[in-house]
Length: 70
Image 1 (cartoon, rainbow, N blue to C red):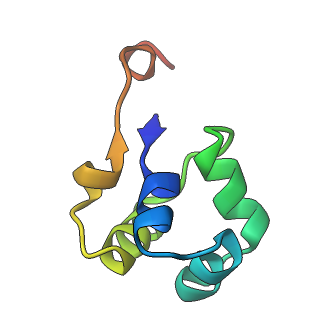
Image 2 (image 1 turned 120 degrees about the vertical axis):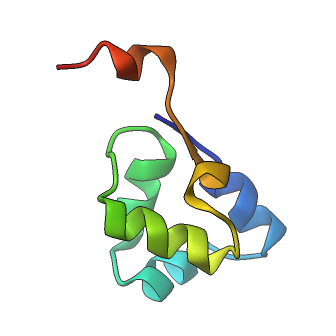
């Protein structure tokens, strides 16, 4: 899954730690999501999108390979 968290953090002048605090996760979780190593829950995805004033689909996007995962 592709995401624009890093871009939105830059636009909003937020560090990973600041975003993590706002959505009640660790900085490492934000880092893992940005790197595509961790797929966030629906609730966390909604919290992140809300923090940026965006819809979830404006932050997260399925990639072709996501359709083929089991």
